[in-house]
Amino acid sequence: MHTGTTLTQFIIEEQRHVAGATGDFTSLLNDVVTSVKVIANAVNKGALVGTMGALDSQNVQGETQKKLDVITNDIMIRANEWAGHLAGMASEEMDDVYPIPQKYPLGKYLLVFDPLDGSSNVDINISVGTIFSILRAPVAGRAASAEDFLQPGTKQVCAGYALYGSSTMLVLTTGHGVNGFTLDRDVGEFLLTHPGMKIPVDTREFAINASNRRFWEPPVQRYVEECLAGTEGPRGRDFNMRWVASMVAEVHRILNRGGIFMYPRDTKDPSKPGKLRLMYEANPMSMIVEQAGGISSTGYERILDIAPTGLHQRVPVILGSKNEVEVVLGYHKDA
Ligand code: P6P
Image 1 (cartoon, rainbow, N blue to C red):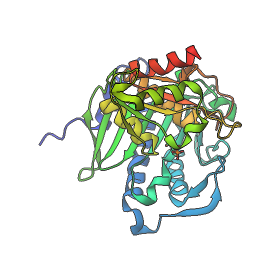
Image 2: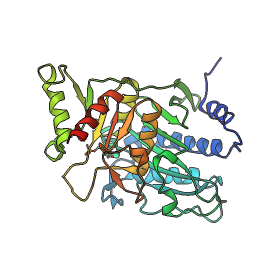
Image 3: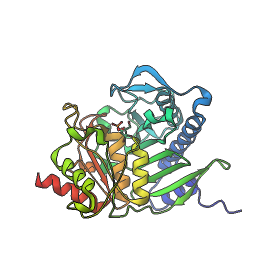
């Protein structure tokens, strides 16, 4: 019986297009996939195994950590620290760079991730995900410093996310388009189900946390008001709205049917230029969105061009269907 193209087969076939590939990247990506399978299992068991609820600890963002935030972070660390492909790891859940233990060899890549994005949803059984980004270490085989991670998104070798939803999916790009895989739990393999994902250039669906409306900058205020004005307004058509409070779920919807997702700069906390983190949310999602024909911007500049200044730096994010994002960027230029 033909099982279809497995992710393992897909990665190895991709490797054949890379001159001089040693197999290190392929092996690293397979270890990341293994960690995603383990996380999917932990998330899927939910309340059955007592992993629901919050800890009394906070992460570097000052956000209360869920038990699964820490559990999934440990899963990513344990599955990826031993193989000799990494010079270091960084995560939303860890203040500083995770050094590879001395008992393991150092490699030529850096792995940065949000182990459980949208974790505030996990207790209420709404989709959550894992977001990851792979960079080259500036010096292969040397323990990575925080500065080594501070590379613009254009330097990413690979970006991907896992979505723990009604099915468990893995979506990734290595710079040659975006492909989606669905976990067949009976086989324990991800199978290629969404080859060559492309974001429709037009949309009538926007995603934003409307409770922050009074804090938005004028261009975003204008855009959302015009969407709400519908056929009677300047856009001359009605729009739909979604907000899942899980970036992975929003981006996956946009990859499948188009849309625009905005977590814009707002004045709610002037010390924060946005809520989403550049290194392990905005950059990997921006690489995926651009590879699928979309646009991802702060409103003022291309996210992938930003020169990072900190591991946990926040940025405003406006991403999705090309023509709709360009409308919002036009309003920013007018302002
Ligand atoms: P709010 C989840 O915490 C997250 O980082 C993204 O996944 C999501 O899009 C956003 O924050 C939700 O933010 O303010 O609606 O809770």
